[in-house]
Image 1 (spheres, rainbow, N blue to C red):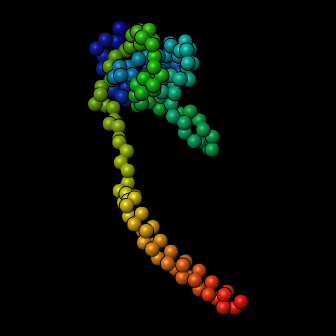
Image 2 (image 1 turned 45 degrees about the vertical axis):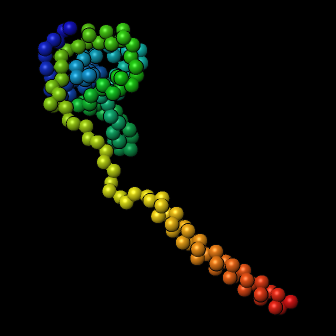
Length: 150
């Protein structure tokens, strides 16, 4: 491996963000994939998308190269072969300083009262206890009114 022992900060890796100088972080290791961009079976867009976000500029979506993203999830989602993983060694330049990577935030749902199925069914029962006798009463009054006029 070319870059044994070298430790990079996220800011340092972030400087290598163009198609002519592209570094990725995968499983805590830093890879210079610049020479591999054209040879990648999925195309260079796949590798660049690991460091690209789309930003709306004047109502047009433009790719904006941003770094500071760990590409591990993108890499693992594809399910690379063992030979592809072995090939990564030639692009290895060092390790990432884990302390410079921001912690992932977890989604916390808003505090809202939970939907209570029991209370809903209780409400429907009470509503029916009121509406059914009312409907019977209306039906009886209607029948009485029509039979009286005939």
